[in-house]
Each structure stands twice: as structure tokens, then as C-alpha cells.
Length: 241
Image (cartoon, rainbow, N blue to C red; front, side, top):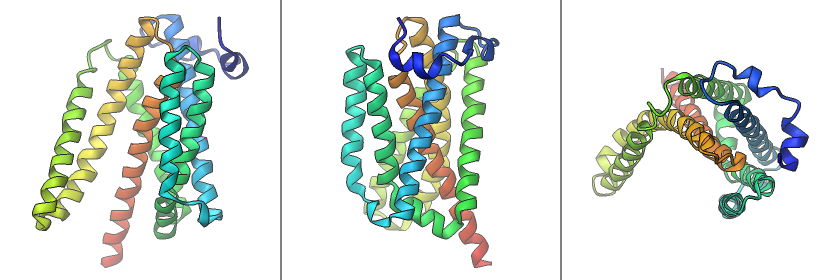
């Protein structure tokens, strides 16, 4: 039986028709549509949290990471118990807390780049996400899941390089450039791998909208931050000329 959240928000959308070209079952197409809608809602809640820190600067604080982590834990626990509607509320709390926690960063990017550039970064990120997630959906099933392992290994390499800069500060500039480029590639790979993993889990009967949305939302958020960093780096180079 569909849960209350699905009845209220997801029922008006005919996901089976919208995703008819995806080579999976009707139930999985419906689940994917629900996940994407929840991901869009989470992004809107994140934007609300970030906007609140711009109009009320005192709200911006890294301490918001504490409730964010608690909400993330809540998503895992409640989804594992089968209470996916409650897990979605935890997901909303996580998205809002992340927006507030990244308030200082969003204030910085807004001041340095302008609100138009931040909006452009959001549109660019959404376009990249849609393109690569769509590519994963239309590709042969399970053919790209291995990219998640490559992305995981690349993240470890970035972490090791960061430790290396503690002992050799001269390579810090190289590290930040590498982190920006490689990190962007990593989270694009994660979008592809996570999309295919979600399809396989759904086909196996695991259709937790909250858990699967959390995966893609984290990929989307990390990609957004890196797109902003790219724009900021480009703006600084232009200002030096």
C-alpha cells in the first residue's frame, strides 16, 4: 500500500508515462519519478536554508552540521524500519540544516559572484545531474555501477593528497586545483553509479524513496559546491587581468 506521502504528493504524476523509455519495470519507473521529485523538493528546502542565512546572517553557522548529521541518521534508521514517510521528514530536516550550515559559503559566493551567478550554478548543476542520471537510466542495467568504486577510490586519493600537503605546503595550490577538477568528476561518476544502483535496488523490491533520494541529493549538493568553486576561480582570474 502506498504510504501517506506518496498519496499526497506523488499520485498526480504519471511517472510510468514520463519515463516510458527507461528499460525497467513500471514499479521502478514510478519509484524513480518519486525519487527525483523528492530530490527536487530537498534542493528547494536547501535553497530556503541558504537564503535564510543571506537575509539573516546570524543564522549561518557550522554548528548546523550537528542536526544535519542527526537527521541523516534519522533517515537511515526510520527507512530501515519501513517508516519511509517519517524518513522523508528527516530528509527535509537534513536539507534545511545543510542549507543553514553552508550559509557562510553561500554568503561568500553571493558577495563575490552575485546572486545571478549562484542561480547560474544551480541551473548548471541541475542540467549536469539530469544529463548524467538520464544517461545512467537509459544505459544497460548494471553496466555502470562499477563507476562507484572508481569514484570511491578517487576520493581516497584526494584525501591522501590533502594529508601530503600538511607535510609539503608547496603543493597546496596543486591540491586545490586537483580537488576541484577530480572532485567534480568523482561526483558525476557517483550520480551515474547511484542511479543504476537505485534501479537495481528498486527491481529487487527496495523502494525507499527517502534513502534513495538522500544518495542523489548528496551527489547533487557536492556537485553544486564545486560548480560554484569553478565560477569563483574563473572570476578571480578575470579580475587579475
